[in-house]
Image (tube, one colour):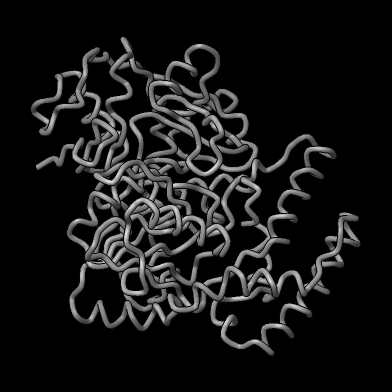
Length: 427
């Protein structure tokens, strides 16, 4: 069984929590895109963890975790993340963590370039992309320019040095010649690669071959996405997107088995909307209304700590995300956060210069879209102990059914609290 778990909206929907939950019955969890520019928060018997690179199945003793070829990996960050987990009693070894030999390495100058460009945009236009400044856009750009170092390169010293020397000479044309910043020294890059790359060599393998064998043996494989559909490089709110494909259809490609089809796609969406980073966010709340929701949901970025923009559930964006992800079923997270509201707003359409639409727009049309709201009655009580849909208050059930009908997808899971067991599986 091949199942993709991906975000319906702008990211931060709670994918890590759902992967951690559903990996109980998995043999393998594979991350297939992105880097350390977003985080997955997992709360289990070991405590609370914020993962940026490691797959969320890492807490399960019998699960093998894959970091696929579609990922971009900051080796220093990965080493730190691994040390943090092992220091808290989580076992990590080449038996339960495998890194694709085709995965791309994020180098220190990619992080510098990210920062330099955000600073230039802020200075010149006042409109930066809202990057996490983790080097993601520069490294993906270099990947398609065929000017990056991959994990497999770590094993061939002479060839690695030649590649680093040539690539650094090219990058300095921009770093020193364009941004007038300190030029990169190839010896420093080689030293960095040895310091943080050498300890990871034993984890590197042909993940595609490993996954093909596992699939042929009938293993249960979960594919874990980073961010959400609206951050996809092709179909998201471009250019305020990530630099990779965040949709479920990319899962087999980014993990190493492009010729094998998914069996199921599970989309994750919050019971309200959140967004980290720049770009259009039609349902954005402000002032006291926003702060109440932000505090109730603990809405601060897992990778950056930045306060998230918050808003009402967006039917237009969510229905679009469900379509992009080809979702067979949906997990609705953080329903409990809305328990304080008397009336719960839901954006059911966009007003674009007087035209009412339920189709998600792009470009300037999205920038100028205004939300059209409907309001549902709240339930005003604690639902964190509910373990069946029937135990939910009537208005909470009505809210769930309303959302499912509007986005056109069955809601299979409902989270009612932060802990692993605080969820409802709808029979």
